[in-house]
Length: 473
Ligand code: NAD
Image 1 (cartoon, rainbow, N blue to C red):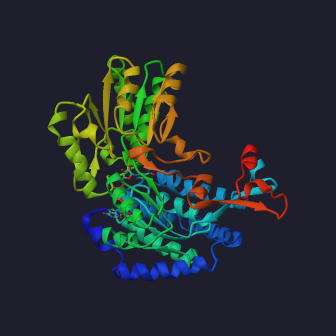
Image 2 (image 1 turned 180 degrees about the horizontal axis):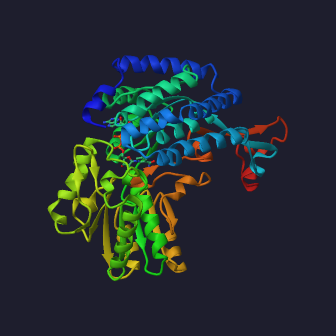
Image 3 (image 1 turned 120 degrees about the horizontal axis):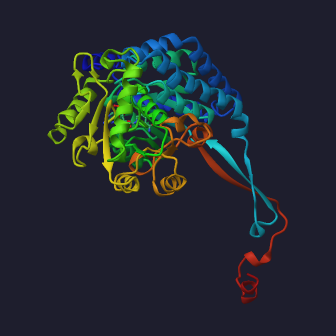
């Protein structure tokens, strides 16, 4: 999206503090009336959401193409199919998820029984990002509805076509007394952040996450922060080279052209193995995207002129001059950057200091593969860490010694498709998690409930505290 498209796409009427107050009042009263709590309401909303996805796939693909030139196949696999499957899972499991869970009691409370009752948090705010503008908006909304909350979604202004489509579709298919979309950029989000929410779920960069967390702290509002970071790929030399290269190429350039939070950010391999790995990466780039990848219909563009300028700055950094071994071409008017490989960029270069979030891939070489673990651990905890190896010991070391939001061995990015795994970061890459049942949990409070009768009172618990009573302990 260009600056102009973004400017023109913000909400027609200014959404300010007063509008945010009104919105909160309405949603709070819906929630307090208990409307969103029943199984029937939750499942009816999820069913409507599913219907919305089924009826609107063409419009969704068009919006994703307009915002990102996202290939239709990617739109289906990475966005539409993912949320359809989240929605279906929530519908299938909702009754189970809502059931209180029995808990064991002990002698100190005998006789008693206990359970953990999941309850909705109340009115929640979801702020989403532009790179998977459908998935990152609707997936958390599914969790919020399943858990029985009223919800406001604030899509990203950097994906204007999807933002306005979401406002239109959610307005048409869902219960607007409990589920609202607010379009807009910083002023609108700031007005929303002044409200007292019961949870804020934010997806985006770490700088804005600090703004969100500071606003939340004023009301002791809990947050989920789904952030990013530099996700490394450590590549050993005893691997299946073809499988490894094609998985990396597709995970980097075939997933929104590197603009994915879990995209491989940089590769580490040994000095000795680097040349064969690079040859195979180049070979698969041509195989997948042709000799002229800037014009490949199978590759998304850079999402926004601001991000194009940011990526150009990483490429123009003097510290990597002479180190670009593949690609490097840019086309500002079409927001395209060729798949680019950079060999041995210095640690203090921009490309090795900032999250790349685009089609550039630095390769770091080390003397021995184990040095890679040390390299990763000397940097902030990434959202994902990937390892390709056939060595059991290295796999074990990687899993036990590398702290990351998630780890995948011998592939990249796929962990986020497994709904029995929590998806989220750690440290600088975020806090909290979602997907599958974890989404329901992210928007629920687990209330501890202890049941007692009126008999079985041990006199020893009551004052006066005599020495005899003390001896009973
Ligand atoms: P973005 O620019 O779309 O911003 C995200 C949201 O923050 C938007 O809704 C935007 O309106 C809002 N925002 C921006 N500035 C704000 C401000 N000053 N105050 C309040 N709200 C503000 O997205 P982005 O940050 O460019 O997204 C890219 C980043 O997000 C990368 O770091 C990426 O790794 C991360 N990301 C993480 C995940 C995940 O699931 N962990 C998914 C996608 C992206």
